[in-house]
Image (cartoon, rainbow, N blue to C red; front, side):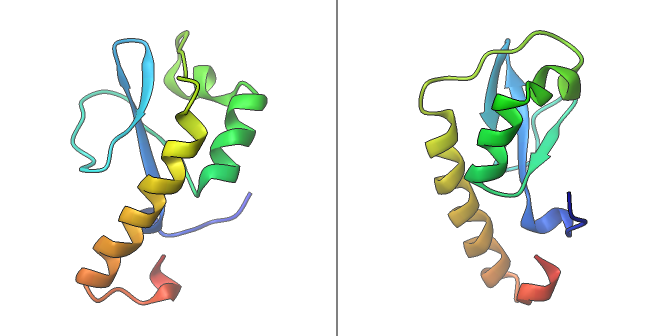
Length: 88
């Protein structure tokens, strides 16, 4: 594990019992954060997401692939807000 700025992480939230990327960071309830698709895959494999959300959750078949897209969007937002790579 590494410590990173929250702005450089992907927030995950629940839509019912399904884990989704919360790009706007506005979904209600508990959230979990991953750094990228590899971290998301590790979280699924280690069964960390049910612990993070404190309940049984489901991930879609394309969940890990969608994290790569979400991470790209996080970097675009950071660039728009003139954040340096050190802040990510």
